[in-house]
Image 1 (cartoon, one colour):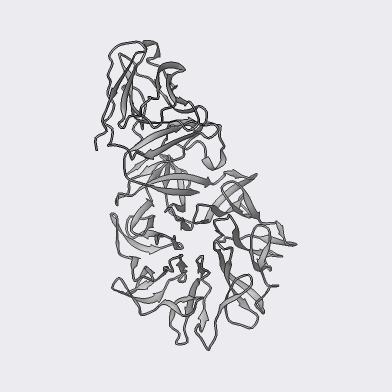
Image 2 (cartoon, helix red, strand yellow):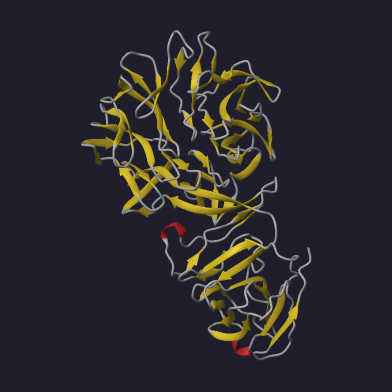
Length: 545
């Protein structure tokens, strides 16, 4: 089910020109959806001089900005991006010392982060809504003529910079507030008799959703635009919504005005959506088992995809899913790490990338699990190839053990996309051969075969390197790299990743793995030479679908 590759460097922290190993692996879940995985952070990573502890609450914006909450040095709390510390316990913001507790931060496309913290005292301080540079609201705030008494629940921020949160004004009840306005207020005269403290949702139009009851004491998903998206008694997927979720409704909403929330459908924990769908329900089949319950928040993107985590009924552990598609589950192996339980929140961006927290430990080890922040990126179906684009020389290389005996050759398929560029191939620093871009472009992949000199046999830990040079923007595709008898792996790039290949780039150069959209699909290259020396045999190979 899982193909894995080793993690050695995290791309969030490295800048070209350097040698990178992509921290990717590819999963082939039971429903056929492919994902690449990238470790964003794990326990004991050092970010901005602070050691990351247990990771719990996470968020990703529509365009992929990431923020997460973590303990620091097994004590104080911190709010991090993958490359920087936003805030930590003990910081002073707007003249007040802050104290972070487990909190769900949020981030928008502009990278603005919002979160909750206590200000003034870790024990007797007041809850506040903050960014990394200022206090948005706390007990001292006056908003739309209302004196804030208590800040409730986690804030959310949209791409217009509006921040929404729940708070109790000193006049009583619960309100839904922005920094400058009251959007809704509980009142005996309605439409919301009660508003509850579960986390609100917000879209870019400024519509907020929240758990509320009407004047008849019927629970539902309230809207700041007025009224309810849905209430108890409504039907979803043929099931009756007859109870709020154990931890609250926790509704979310996207820019299509699609809302989703937790509740009970025919007495079972469930996820429902305002378009009438029953997304998932306890006792539903899930792979080889069944859903027991749901153990985190909900997340929704602007493509109407809904992400969540759940626990299995019988086999133990749990899984992350998008709608009915598995992203990861307990027992999977990703980049040399075994996945345990899923302990934090989950989020999804508009590209369908899923951010989640899993307890992990190195494969084959029996030590304790530690929290790891993982980003799963969906990859399209198709034939994958390596694409080398020059800015100045770029390289693609893999450290291998060479065959013990010969004769043997290095075989691969290639296709120049430009009439410029030169591709050199090296083994242990020795030039095997050179390919020049043609004056007239080919529509099909070509095959190349370079004979391996006997002096290069039976070597351990040497580099096989493809180096592309030429004017900026010169492009070559490479596929089906084979060296029979060697330890070379992922020569066809069908893991949808470069790992365990290494690459170097400079300037505007790029090394990528992409789905090939040209003519056909290549057959694997085969050995065309059975002789020693540095000869090269070139030929046309039609890519067969």
